[in-house]
Length: 275
Image 1 (tube, one colour):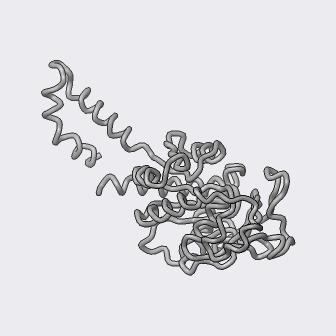
Image 2 (tube, one colour; image 1 turned 90 degrees about the vertical axis):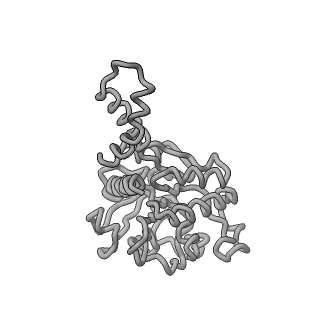
Image 3 (cartoon, helix red, strand yellow; image 1 turned 30 degrees about the vertical axis):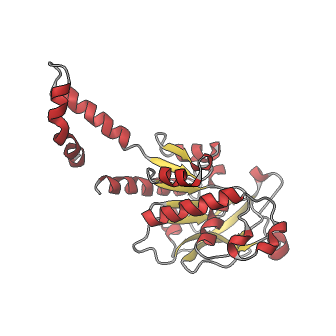
């Protein structure tokens, strides 16, 4: 509230001069507060938007403004990100293996989008520089690991095994259990050590970035969750291999994950007000 008055008072005299006589101070104050509230609306950037992700976030906060970075060129996307309060890296195509030294194996990837890779690498870099909250889902989880120096398994069935099914033809009904590490931030805010999740991926984290630590695994040992190894002085950053946006909000690995991410974005927004 003091921040709002600091904004109002220096220009109050000009407003009195410009407005018609007879308008009350309370009306002027209401107008200013309304403008301030509009400016303070929470904005979350999605690397590539789709209705599932938007609805997932809006179940927690219906007033969130979503910015779809995918429709913008790289420089404009970075400028747009600078006016946002959080970055959600969404699921999608395989990350080009040249980013992690396996370019000769690109023929084994199911789909590639070089434009998207380049865009997301740029906005992740900017978000981390700004200490902005970042959440990566499926592809976004993998991209965070690659950006920070890790590598991926090109194809789980061929290179790792099939003791756990990670990808089904009916992707909306493909499930397995994940096990959350009790010393992780993920465990701290979800409060559970295992849950059934929705899954749909043929790639996964192979060599973990030296800056990250594992927060969850599936029964076959595959890395399903990542976060900062040393979070002190850094922003919120979580990657999950599953699809929380396709899961029931009552599942802690969906609803509490969305709630925690949005809470961190709100904290970031409030911190920026006082810069």
